[in-house]
Every structure is written in structure tokens, then in C-alpha cells.
Amino acid sequence: MKFISVASHLSCLQVLHGEQYLELYRPLQPNATLKSNIVVADVLDKKSGALIIVNITTSDEKGPVCFSQFAIFCVGSGGFGGKTHSNELKPLAATPSRAPDVVEVEKTGNSQAALYRLAGDLNPLHIDPSFAAMGGFKSPILHGLCSVGIATRAVLKHFCDNDVRKFKAIKARFSKPVIPGQSIRTEMWKEGNRVLLQCKVVETGDVLLSRAYIELHGNVVLPNKSPKPSAAAQPATTSALQSDALFQLMSDQLPNYPDLPKKIKASFLWRLTKGGKVVSEWTTDFTKERGSVTHGKPSGKPSCTITIADEDFMRIAMGETNPQKLFMRGKGKIAGNIMLAQKLQTLLKEFDLKKKMAKANKKPTNAPAKTPPSGNPNLKAHAIFTELGTRLASMPHLTKKIKATFLWNITKDGKTAGQWFIDLKTGTGSITAGAPAGKPDCTITVADDDFVKVVTGKANAQQLFMTGKLKVGGNILLTQKLGDLLKSQAKL
Image 1: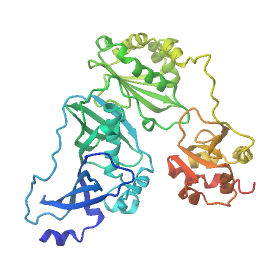
Image 2 (image 1 turned 135 degrees about the vertical axis):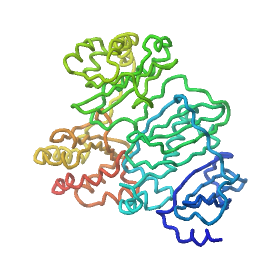
Image 3 (image 1 turned 45 degrees about the vertical axis):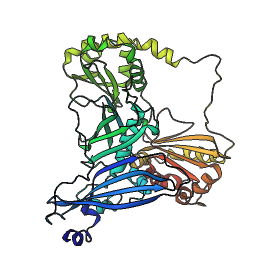
Image 4 (image 1 turned 60 degrees about the horizontal axis):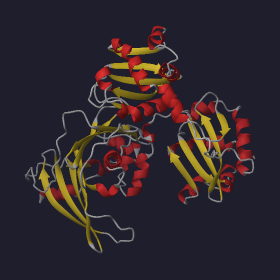
């Protein structure tokens, strides 16, 4: 067959993952031995390339546990006179034209592709910038199956209460690539015992997973309240926004106000700023029957877009100032239907946020206070961080060079005994004892003795990481920027 001789000369740049189907027959057993039977079910001639349909049945000692189907597109290998359609290919679903029932936004990590290589897909397209450039990409792209995993997690969260036993099967088409660091917006629709879905790249609007669905065991029930934003979806910032907590409270309270959509009949995109830059966005949509408060931009055009500083929004929400007065003084910007600004007081008055925020923050008097780990003077690391804070004043260039924040969890006997926060993003930088108010860009956990060895040059951080003695959360690539900072400690 002519196709086989062509396929044997394919490079990684010519092989694209077109579609994927996975069905679980029963839970995987931790101690089982798995064996996969791989069959080329069909080869289709798509003129510009060949589509190879590969079926894989995976079994353990008791029988089949799952079935997978890969549809692999081989660029430039078409035109061999083969058929164009096959009954072997698992069908896709049609994407509904109505607004999605649920939306989830998750920001991928800059190092997401590097981590996903551990799954066994070593295609250099996902890790090597020069190789990715040969394929026409500005930078390495994320694995398609990683996007499938993110979409599956969103469905399990909103429709299955995170119970993985309810998952039966998934089918998806890979339409566009996503770059690590970009955000994925998963749009979901309930249809019988299926959740239809598509995923978009928030930054570009491109659809990356199309005509997809997840089939579940049992009845599918719509979630009864607006989805909570995942931590990964929050924009990076050195301190948590007060307004984020307030919008989340609105989302939680929304089911208690079924008449609100009839009163507002509009959608608002809120763009919250800190230091003059937009760092968080929320959508309050009251154009539909139930209404919704969700993190991120809406799927369509909002009725009104409001750009306002975090602290000014809090003053409005707490009833301390009038929104029209703030806008007249230039402390906020409105785009779209500016007349809708008159409904803002109605919206915020209905929620009575000042009272609810006070109630939410109130702690029982009989509850014992839990003190989080802070700087521990009994640790060897204490002296290093203290000296580092002194020397940081003479290194103002580091913030411009590193532009990141780090939380160090220093352990003793396997438990966190002290924490230090290094802010190399704000001003001339700072080092403080304890955890930050917001989410750090990178979190490093290491034993006290090993930390001392690293900063004094007696141990290699990468070797500690590979052996599990040093753990990194968040953007692991930022650890490479700590060289200049830690070199200043070598003389301690």
C-alpha cells in the first residue's frame, strides 16, 4: 500500500493529533498489570493528508478496563486513492447554539507542557522552541490530551461533585493549539446523560476543543449555583483583591435572589484594576432567567463594561460612595450602555454586601485560633532570610530582572516549620516572614538543612528536586531566576 511507505518517513512535525475518544469500562486497579492491544482500524484519504484511526483496548488480569481511539492526521500523506469516510471513527457531537449552562476558566501554567511530558508524550513540538518554530508555532504548544484533562476536570467539578466514578466516556476534536500560560475557557451544556462542551483560548478566542462531549453514568443534573472560579484562573498578583472575595460572595448568594434578573435585565463586565493595571475580571449576567456571577469575560458582548480600581469598587459595594459621583470624577470608566450604570445601586443594594461580608468574616468566639507558620528564629534558614533582606536593598535591579514572587515553606521533620515570602515584583523588592495575602507565582518547599546546603553551594537544587527533597508549585521555570539572589548568600 502506497500510504505505508509514505508514513514510514513521517516526522513529528507532520503528525497531528486530530481526535480522541476514551471510554472507561471499570475503575483501574492500583496493583493490576495492564496490557494494550493496538489495532490500525482504518486509514482515510483526506487529500491534504491521511487520517489514521487507531483503536486501543487496554486490559488487566480480569479483562478489558478501557477503550481508546486516536485519530491521527498525517500532513502531506494524502492522495493515495483511499476512502474518505469510515464507520470505525467515533462520531462527534454538535455544539448547541444557545448560551452554555456552565462556564469554567482555568489558566494553564507556563511549565504545563514540561510537566505533561511525564505522561510519556516526548514530541519535541511541546518543549523545544526551535522545533516548534519549524512547525510554524511561535513557541511550544500544549499537549492536546492535557486540554482534554482540563475540560474533563471542569465537567466533573460542576456535574459530578468531583466523583470520578460517574465518568464514562469522552470524545473531542483538537481544532487549535494553546500555548502554556494561556487560559482555557470550558463551555458546557447538559444534554441527557451527556455534557456537551467546547474549549476556547481566552486570550485569542480560538476554539481549541470542538464538538466534544463527556458521557456520564446516571442522570446529569445542572449545578444549582454559579461556578466558583478555580485558583489557577486568577490573574497573577502580589496580593488578593478585596473585590474577588466580594464577587464570590455574590455568586454564592445569587440563588437566593431569583427575581434579580427581572429587575436588572443586563450584563456587566467588571474590570478590576490595581496600580492602574487590570488584574481581575468578573461578569454579572442578568439577561438570563437564573442569572450568573462568573470569573472572567462573558462568551458574548456585555451590555456594559466597567473599569474601576479594586478599592473604589469596594467603596461602592459597601455603600460608602455613589458610583455616578466616582465616574464623574474620572475614577472609573464605562463602555457600552452607560445608562445601565443607574442600575448598579439597585444590584448592590439587593445583595446588601456590607452586611453579608461582615457576617462571612465573623468568626465564632469559641473557635480556637490557628496561627499559620511564620518566620521561625529557631531555623537555620531564619538567619539566611534575615541577611538576604538586608542585602536586597543594594540589589534594586532584581525586581526588574526577576518580576516574580516566591513563597518558601521551610520544613523540619517533614512538617512546615517556617515560611518566608520574597516579593521581587513590587518596588525594590521585599522579604517578609509568613505567607502572603495572595497567591505567589512560585512556591518552594524544602527542609531547613537542605535549604542551607543549596544557598551555600553544598547541594544542587535540581538534584534535590529530582530526588523529591525539594518541591515546587506554580511556575517552576521561575526557579531558574533565583540564581542571582541565592549567589549573594554563598558567603554566609
